[in-house]
Length: 344
Image (cartoon, rainbow, N blue to C red; front, side, top):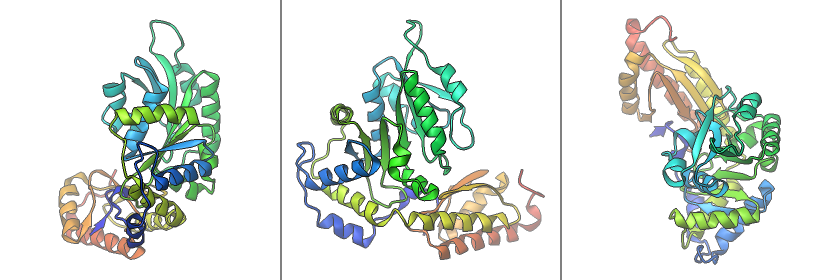
C-alpha cells in the first residue's frame, strides 16, 4: 500500500529494528535506562536546552508541558487551528482545568503580535490569568518564520508569559529552512519534538526545557501514566531516526512537490498548498467517496475530502508518487463529462 494519510503511518526500517533489538536497557522511572539517558541528553544539547524527557506521544508531551507551566484556572494562548487546541482531546481543560484562548492563524501559522498583546490578561480577579503562549512549527506543513518566533517569544516574555513550541515536525522545518534545531528552539521555554512522524520511529516524543522545568514535568508524566520501564528499546529507535533519517526528510519534501505538480496538471483537481511534506488538494465533493474507493483498489490510501491532506514520508518513494498521480488521473479520465468545469 501507498499510504498518504499521514507521516504517522511509517514503519521501522530493518536497521532501526536491529538498533532496538540491541539496545541496552534499564528502568527509566528509576532513571536507570542508559539508552534513554543518552538519547535525552544528546537531543537536549543539539536543541540548546538543558534537559529532556521521553514520552510515548506528542499529545502527552504537550499536555505535560501545559500542566507544568500552568495552574488550574490559568490560560494558554494558542492558534485556533493548533494541534494543542483542536486535536488533543481537550486534555488541557479535561485534566488540568486550563483554559485555552485562541487567536486566528495567519497562513504561515503565526499569530498577529498586536492580537497577542491584546489577548494577555493580568491579575484582575475577573479574568483567567494568561500564563503561556503556545506556537506550532511546522503548521500545516508551513515553516513558522524564525524572525517571527523570536519576536513573538520576546513579546510574550515581556508580558510575563512562558513560551512553548509544539515541534511535532520541527525537523522538517529545520531541513526546509536550513536553520539548526537549536536556532528553531530559541526563545521557547519548552519544546515538544516528535520522532514517530517523518523520522519513522514507531513511537516517541521528547519534552525539552530547563532542568527544573523537566524535573517538575517528570512528576506530571508519572501522574499521566507516561512513566515507562525498559524504554531504551524505544529510545534506540528514536536515536536511530535522529542519526539516519533527518537529512533524508528533503526527499519527502521533493516528493511532495512532485505530487503537487502532478496533481495540479489534472482536470478535476486544484492544489491548494504544498509545503515541506504536505500537499493540500481540492477534489469535487461529489467524487470524493468514489475516488477514495478507486484509489484503495489501486493500493493507495488517502483520506479523500473536498480538501484533502496528502503527506509524504519515509515509506513513499518517487516511483510511488508517479503511481498516485496516474491513479487519480485514471479516475478523473473515466469520470469524464461528470466533472465540474473547475474545482472552486
